[in-house]
Amino acid sequence: MSKWDGKSKGTVLGYKIFVFFIKNAGVKSAYFILYFVASYYFIFLKKSNVSIFYYFRKRLGYPYLKSKMMVYKSYYTFGQTIIDKIAIGAGLKSKFTYEHDGQEYIIKLLEEKKGGVLISAHIGNFAVAENFFSELDLNFKINLVISDLEHSAIKQYLERVTEKSKINFILISDDLSHIFEINSALAKNELVCFTGDRYFEGVKSLSEKLLGEEALFPAGPFLIASRLKVPVVFVYVMKEPNLHYHLYTREAKVKHRDEKGLLKEYTESLESMLRKYPLQWFNYFDFWN
Image 1 (spheres, rainbow, N blue to C red):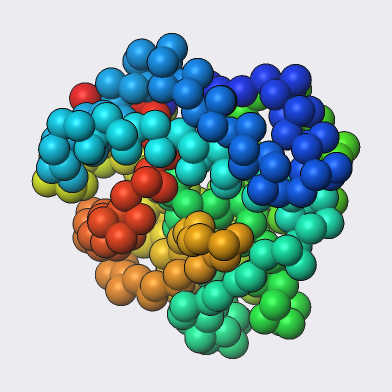
Image 2: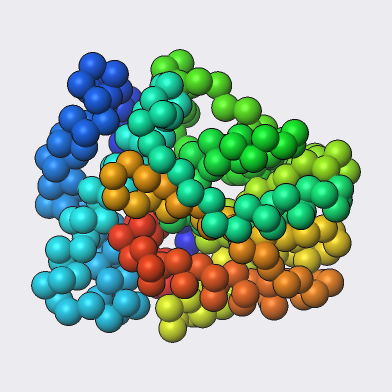
């Protein structure tokens, strides 16, 4: 049912080990440790192995042996994005290079002074997007709409060892108070960001094809974005070789109250990214059921 259970992998001890190597021996040394971590995941995480293998074998159509190899590489790449996030947050931003494809859409959006909605996904490394936007030298604020289901102990530890993020978090609540926070942010010409690819049980969903197969997506981001009459863009931050990141911003063509049309445009945009960066799909659960 393309449903995520809200649980992320990893322990505080594991993060502490990576932070130690990043600070004392550099980012590449932490990458070396990843070979062993990715091997552990590849051998022992049977359930997520099946899900990510299906993605490579059935959705992307890779041969059997290549799909197996890509499962291991996927874990390794995911680990790299986590290390990069920690390193950048710990003051090593200058070690990385950045490229923004489509920044004119962000500038145009802000100039309209209506606020704007950004829709991303659990691909690449959106957690470092803040560093791209700071390069624009524009005065604006980002609000990230989330369900607070991540491992709180890991979050608390990372907040102690990395610079405080300037992103404001809007927590999805049962009383729908987050809707008022979203409207308030947009009224102040701020950006509101959603991830559109993880559906939770009990949450209203929409169905659409991704990579040739139907899957369920959370309805909220697409219902809200298609009703607020504000500019909407799709944003992805993708990892490339040699500590380089490439941010893609793509303008969405939104018809009022057409959430299905917006979702279809989103899945087409997401699919184009996955075909270009197949290793950076980080939904390790039964996405297509």
